[in-house]
Image 1 (tube, helix red, strand yellow):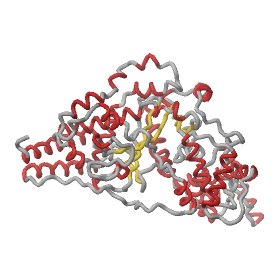
Image 2: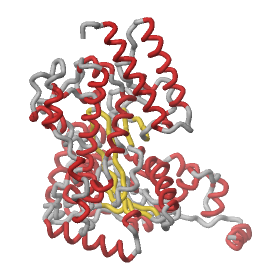
Image 3: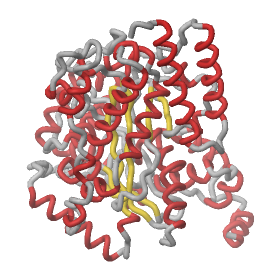
Image 4: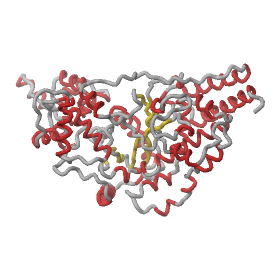
Length: 534
């Protein structure tokens, strides 16, 4: 470095340095860690203005890198060369990523046909010929390797599953890894305020408040290792940055890792924050406690909201991601093999249990239910998912655990018939049957954690138009205690104590749950006082 600096001084002129995309990503990471523009300009032999420009274009660089399939190409590519038709390029990339996430086959002819559609739908001038040359340049701009004349093999057959699993197990042995060091994360939509009586229709569902379910939906991401012994806090994405029910709550003290996005969807920025600030530190701490090397692999599917492996990597490169092939993700992704479904069953069964403890007016219970209540309940539901359930979900990738499957696994099953019997003695739910409960359990089973865009929405996004919804949207329902002097005073005290506990970083979850249980008891007493005949 000294010699380089001396040469610069002798010549009186700095040699022009052209950074690769990977260099720019490294500079962005160092800036986030506190390095100054001056320090980085010396290290990379560039001007401070160049460093500031990289900082300014951070999101653009990260988004570009996230859309790339190839780490090696990013290490060579030195510019984000734009297309002659930038709007068309944006629309095609959005469409392609969405098709890949769904596991749909994508071929050269299919791409050409969609490109022609978007060209005219965007109202672009001139003639457009989606030739083989255009497809090659599109692939090069975004480092996409898999598209060919016949298309990607996305039929999800067992041969592809076997090939991937065999390859992954070879990698596992070669790297001398332990199942404790292999993780999987996956998102799902959760209708957190959905009544069991309102699930008969597949679309247009409403809650007790009469609002569409989409308004009371959050994205929940589960992450655990292959032993099931390390379950990270759930990652939850809601609409409001500070929902009313949070009141004075410090979000860092919530039982989940909470993020906000105007549509309550996972996005590239949130996922990257989660990986860097939550996943990497927690995994390091866990592996250290087990006396294992601080090295780990996170398996992900091809969701459009998952940044590329070029972006998702710890500073030392020891914690990184691997992607499941798009044609097999739904068949072997561990969290999709019943883990998320069982967590949701625990959540909904827990809500019914809470309702029974507070009284039998189901609609009133749901009306009072807040997002904060739901976060505690979903956290408890995740805690109830047993390690054996998670281990079993990895059997397609790591076969040989069959003998462990039967250990208490049946206890994980939540009987819809038993819940239906309980509900038949609950006011307003007398006609509940097993089918109603099963539909309730499955109401959001196909909800993705990302927004599935229509062609019109892809076009609007390509043109730079933003959604009309407000980023500061908040819950409309706020918990308001009844005005009974004695019980109301006690209820107010428990609320204040809960607010205090939420602000104390050293308080553990059971402390808060005890007070929340007490609050439920007071609510029930209050109800009995107002309705003495019950």
